[in-house]
Amino acid sequence: MERKTFPGTLDSLEGIRQEVKEESQRVGLSKKATYNLLLAIDEIATNIIMHGYEENDKSGVIDLQIDHRDNQIEVTLEDDAPPFDPLQHTLPTEEFFNKPLEERPIGGMGIHLTINAVDKFRYEFANQRNRNIFVVKVGDA
Amino acid sequence: MSFHILSEAKKIAKITLVGEIDSLSAREFQKEIEKLATGSPDELILYVENLTFISSAGLRVLIFAKQKMGTNLAIYIVKPQESVLETLEKTGLQHSVNIVDQYL
Image (cartoon, rainbow over the protein chains, first blue to last red):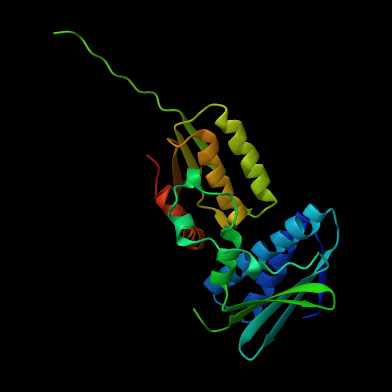
C-alpha cells in the first residue's frame, strides 16, 4: 500500500483504524487478530499524538504504511515527535493489575495492550523519525 | 414489639455506548460520567451491546468513574461483545465490574 499521511491529532485515529481494518480484511486476517491489531495501533498512535506532539507543543503528522508479504501483515507508523521508545516505558506489573480500580494509577495499560495484541512489536529511530512497527501473522486465529 | 421499617432507594445511572471508544470519544464518555457523578449514583449501568471497540482511554474512564463516584459504586457492563470483554479481561478490569447479560 502507498504511504498515507494523517495529521497528528486525535480525530485521525478513526481514519487510521479504518485503513488498517480494510487492509486486514482484504488479506484475510481473522476478526480477532484484526481487532487486536487495531487496538495496538490505536494505543501507539494515541501516544504519539498526546505525548509526542501535544505535550511538547508540537504539531506534526503520522505516516501509515501497510505491507503484506510472507503471510504476514506489517504496519508502520512514523512520526516527527521527539524520540520516544514505548518499550522503554515501564510496563505495569502484576501488582498494578491486582489493584482495585479506585487505587490504580491512571496510565500504563496502553502499552500492555499493544504488546499483547500483536505477534511482534518493535521501535526504531531512523532518519530523525520515530518508527513503530507492528507485525501480525495472517492465518493465525 | 416496636415497629421497624427499612427502605432503600438506589440511585441508578445508565449509559448506552454505541460504536467505538478511542482517545477522542473517551473525552465525551468522561464528560457524561462527570455529569452523572454529581447525582452520586450507587450503580452505573453501561449498555454496551453495540460497542465495537474500546481502547485503554475508554478503560481509564471506567477507573475514573470509580474514583469520581466513590468506591461503593457498582458498575454493571451489560452484554459486551467478545473483543470488548477480552480487553476488559486482559487489563484485569473484569474483577472490578459486574459483567452481565442483562441488568434486572
